[in-house]
Image 1 (cartoon, chains in turn blue, purple):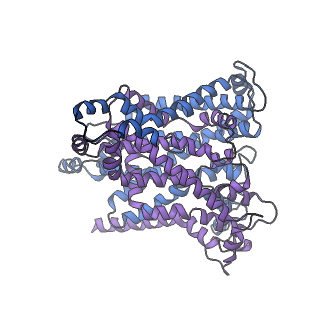
Image 2 (image 1 turned 135 degrees about the vertical axis):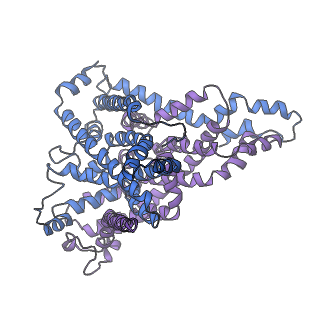
Image 3 (image 1 turned 180 degrees about the vertical axis):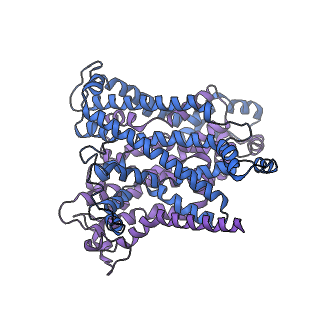
Length: 317
Length: 279
């Protein structure tokens, strides 16, 4: 603390040259002192590691021995020869493409339903938001394991409807879908953001369109949805970035298996870096992931002007 | 009339849907008292409640008890939360209230780092902390938080900047005329007014560190330094006859702190999620 206090506080409040002092406090130095923790952190724990990681990605660094420059070998091997990389890409894209729209759709529909129901809204909101509060924990991953295991109650429950049970987690056909379900179950945070966006839509728009004879359906389609697109855009970007980095559940529940059917990108990267200590190789994987996320976010940003509706009045998100 | 029917339908749908959402949690509570034989029943209540699941689960890891793991985790949380509150409020105050060259530039860099996938940093940071001799210590968690980083640090700066911008500037001005320094304004005027935002920051900082399984997995090796998450993982990995009831009981206890915090500050939390888009 004292590091930050010094130049700012050791000054007599009764100094005669207050004007002069004020100017001094508005000098760039004060501002930089306040943000110095972040600035230091940015250079030491973000920018420098990023450059280090980029450098590693061109070496055969293993943490144990010295490293040799290998040029583009890591990237070449990953893109051309690594079957597990391809598998992890397929799994990750499957996960993203299904879980993100499902999660956003659930969030949007329930937010629309909740937006009208006035009584008891906070109780519903709590019940629906709570899973996303605890969902990232290892405890919930374990709960999932007990529910969807061969002996889990999901099988007994489905048996009532005559559906043949199976080991949902141990079957390569279904393992990934249990993880998707776990992610979709946590749609509450996106829903809360949608709810806030819905509240910001000016009432007058609905009133004016009612006068003009617009029905409920037209209003949803022509007013609610366009006005909500900025929030949708924000939720979409965050959900995509989050989904690409999914780790805890895939690591705890299935450990990438069975038969690599849940080998999402982050788990594969972890395996290369910290089980096999191929830090250089894993760094190349990390940069490929970063580029993919950047490209997808860039595409979303570019297309946004065609479907995101911006109005000066409402700033969603 | 038709509006009324609509409302009944909507409410029944919402009620059933909410019930489906929290059913796994209800089952979890009841099943923490079950024996292995009853575990595959979808019905949450045990025939004979085994309260022992909690006692035995608590001591299930030989040589340790969960008391140790909770003490470790709370100690880590305390250090990390304090570091976060001090560093993030200072930085946020700087961005929200002071003018300095390149401010806009640095702030957009800050927003950009929000989107940076953790995977890019995890390897070089591990190598750096390894070199510093920080493996199997808590420094890899505390130091980043001291520098307004770590789990969620950047987000908290962003949240606090938004909040401080909403605090009327006239208060600063009059304090300035009374001879208060910038640090005085930060400490005596702005900080007390950001209390509600700080509660959000503290709770999410607590939560994200509690759930930072990858970080704990990487940096903590010896069992006597284990956090609750690692201990749970160890319990579930233990070979032999797995007692599911004990595992469910211990994992249920592990979400209790988050649940209590949520119960205490529910409204505030939901509102800040809504306005900042936090998870």
